[in-house]
Length: 290
Image (cartoon, rainbow, N blue to C red; front, side, top):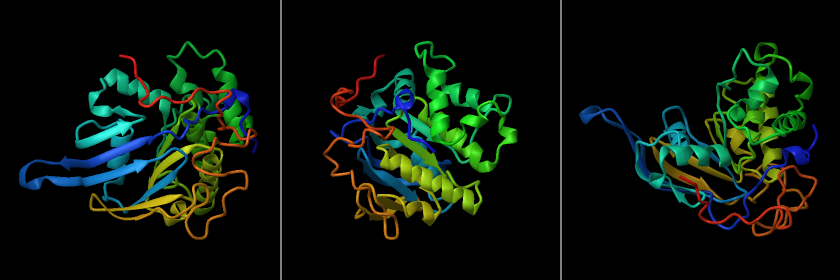
């Protein structure tokens, strides 16, 4: 596996403010006495450079929380701020643009289009984008980074579960997101393939990408920088003692080139590196045109 070259270099926001700020989120399903709170007063913040894992069993509300943070669900109580933008104040068009430019999604079920080859599945988010002349080169570079360039012309039915998951990750990375949201990303994978996928997320984080994942698997939490335990729609414990690029107990130590959360992501060989010389500072809030 190679590091991303310039064609696939990701734009990571400088650490000058939270990426995600959620305050007192509440989401109800059902009416009257049958109403059930999927989320009940959840507040959390995600800073640039973090790898946050929300750990909970089925029905804990974790996927609902991820959908709200990702702008896929708008019917809820509370407040969500993404990249300095209050989501409640954004039109559907503005939110879709912010989501498309800043957020990548990785789903448990992969959601690949079976009639498209691997390359076209990765390019799917750009089908209506005529401004990216180099999008094919960028897609091939991302596939190369994930060890799938030689499968670019194959179809999903010809791939293993782990390879399909990597295609889904490549699709999520194509638009150079500042935040990667992952919903049970190892849920449909066997143990060995899941371990490889977890190692990939760890490497992407070390290259500068901010990740927020929801899962019921402790092994994914083992490479996170912060673990939030969610039960019955409420946060009941948070482990925030891990170093920014290491993990909780048992994880590998942070790489030597990393210095602190306030410095630029330093290794120019890493695909997600940004620096003041080649990228302007991200304004807070990020303005979304109407």
